[in-house]
Length: 329
Image (cartoon, rainbow, N blue to C red; front, side, top):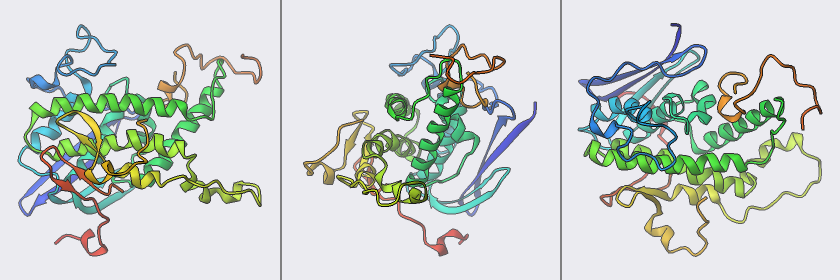
């Protein structure tokens, strides 16, 4: 089977290097995972199973996402989320090297694993895994995910149903369901490890459950300026009622109560927002199950996280790395 390899090499110290080789099917871009011998109890499907999980124990004895996370969790038991590491990510197109916190590296790996692990609730993000951008910023993620969703709507509009829409309601729904999933994953990890490196990585991944809906609510005003060449001259620029990007960064996943909660600073604010098949292969989850690719469609015929607080009260800050920090010590 032909595969595409994405390799993470993580240097935790002078004598320790952890390497993760993620092999993906060249056509479907599904993860080609090795069988996990004697998987731990926390990976079983019914162990803290997601409330909206469509899988059954008869067909899936273990959660596909938990099985793929097991290798990461098992190799980082003795680490802390704030441990500084040097990571090198190798893809077919590029090589990325950076010094940063371990939690950010694990979150980047989870961004890759989530969509391709076999979980139906994360499959909507498979296009992002196909064009994986390691260690991407919040702004880059917002740009990529909204572009992905609109392209999915274009493909959907070319099917017999013709139901593709430019509104982002469906994307908000996807992230709402991802928050439900992240909450269940956090619950699994409570008994899986005492290390907070993977737990806080879930915090970073789950941040977008809030960040994306908030920015969509504000009509992506902060990114509108990039598109002036497309827009009519003289049109009045809409004003953002608040800086949603900065506000969303201040939220954290409370691993004790298993819900997203604001930091203490944000609790004092009065203006907190409310919580919010196949066509081109990887767009399948967005499209109806009865898509017939052989039948031509005739038009008109069809009707930066500022601060995160861990469960033990530790406040973590993710800041841009200086140029000098991009090299090995």
